[in-house]
Length: 250
Length: 191
Image (cartoon, rainbow over all chains, first blue to last red; front, side, top):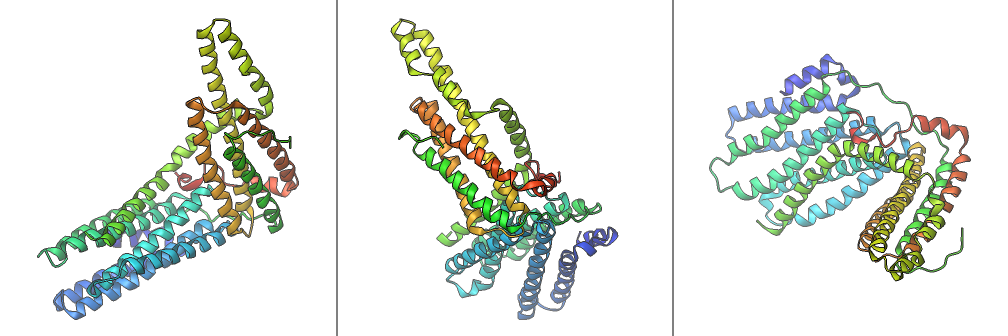
């Protein structure tokens, strides 16, 4: 499935527009090959397999991060102000979630890597959902292909959070077939996402949109506080709805 | 399952719901936009509240009741509530117009202030909460109509001021508005 997606990325020349996403998929293919070779030569519970597994996972997680930023940039770059706002929202939510993750993942040092993986996915999902909410709030147009990629990333991160919590929490060290169960349950949603992405990317990508920021900054600085004051006034009025006083006409 | 695992599991499930909402709510928004458009046509000018208020005056209602027409009085009371609810919905349309304008300006600006945007978002949440609070109180028949009159005056005044401010943006903004995202945009826009 990953190879098929790579084929689509090359056939439609999407790698030019989505170099980091292409790299992410290629790295996943490489990770699969690497782990296959390692498991052929070493015991799956050996130190070598452990290191190969977690290091390759860390690299693909980093690649996923870059791929996501790339897609968000493609969506939001025509809106400079919103892109700047999105960065600050991502930084803020990530910082808050990092504190939460560190606080909530204390305990068993043997599970530190699993907790780190789950924490990364949680921060990643929070940041991405914040961005998606921001896009929706400002009614920013998102092309189908980019929408599919963003939703796929977010869905997979959420599935990983749930798997790390339920599967690792309940079955690890208690079930003989834990590794096999983990493989099946974690690979299945990934395959579904790859299929979803393949369908979404099996078309030429839309043309890049031009810069939408055409107002001088001074206009925003003048209008925005004015609107907020007025919205505030309406709210104040609503608040006093049941406590009517004669108000002067404005 | 320990406390920490329960928290992570809950967050994971909530996030999945959030993704589903963000992915599929575009269609609903389009429908809402169409409905709001219809509402806008229904309330061409919300500043006619004095006339509405006069038509709904308590005096008429009391008079009918005193004259021995309880059924008619009841019917009028129902009508009066329906008109008040419609009017409240019109106020919401006006509020949303202001919000939409704020978002348009933000989208078109090269620099956006976090504090201003957060404030706008918070005000939107507050308005929604209060709107529904008042809505349910109106439905239950405990809200005084005079309060809507005050709101009406305020919103009308605000709209006039905003229209003046917007007209100052000139042709540049008008040109940009054509290429702006609108209610049909969002995550469902491409679909």
